[in-house]
Length: 94
Image (tube, rainbow, N blue to C red; front, side, top):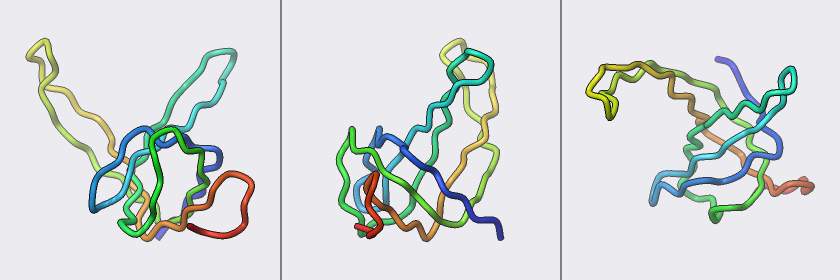
């Protein structure tokens, strides 16, 4: 199993009773790219807008959905399982 650490990720959505979603922004050749991760840890109390560091087990799956233009699309959903969550700059998990 692969592990992942995401630093300075911003909480963008709460999934009540299950976890939350974070976004990681980075610049590549002058362009900003965003990666979204679902963090599965129901015991962590965060709010939208919090900046956190997340460590856990990496998993990915391909999801199929129909876009607003009624065209089938695929996307990769990335998750962090058994996550430890720390506020930015702290060494202690929530």
